[in-house]
Length: 352
Image (cartoon, rainbow, N blue to C red; front, side):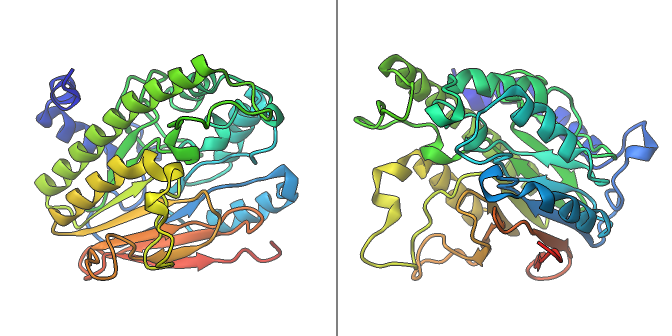
């Protein structure tokens, strides 16, 4: 099946444009319209993820984090995965009800992007020994089951799949003159299981489970790439100033950090090769600014890791958000008329 053509048949470029315009806040529910969505001026939003982790005692820090973002009058926030740590059970309550309740404490619309701790790694015994694909289906049914964001104020979202169904967790919205994309690209090699990496005494996973995981990876990877391309097509058609892509995984950006060991050549990172190649290609063909946001490794960073020191993509920026035990957030201000479009400010929450 040609996913690209199938996607366009489902939506049609004209229909996509209409949905995107609706996602800017032009809904019938005026109280849910995001501030600033209907003009091309500056606006600010928040990025956060990889929290709270029970093993690090993060729960008492969340109220101050929420209060800090609520006081900032943000257009929206984006959570880039991992609503719990990687050594606690993937229960319905923990990855479902508790996460939803936390997101709905935010005054601003809040968009959720899945992380590996909510599904990919749930086969581990210390995670409860779940089937990863069953947990992914649960996430879709609970956290991607409407056409709106979380938060006290809602924001319309376009979903790749029907709400609650496969690929509904892949989202897109337009705010101001920027196209935002949320993709299910999780840690643990994007759920791609390499030969010899399946069975472990720390896991309940079987060889049949790993075969299912690899089939899931291949299908979702194709959908991710189609959604990414379609989003850039929309951005170019609109004359957007920028595109921001949000995933959970650190895809193994190595250069220019070390010259002797390139993470991109290690098997544990080959599940991201197609995504990074597509992102680089789309960035090169896009006249505006492109930002990739991710969490996963919990070190706040802003850099330009694509493609290398010699062949740096000048219009590409990577932002890695804070993560447990550093319960802070990143404020992004968009100024469409400025050269860089996106301006980043780490917000250190007092007391955390």
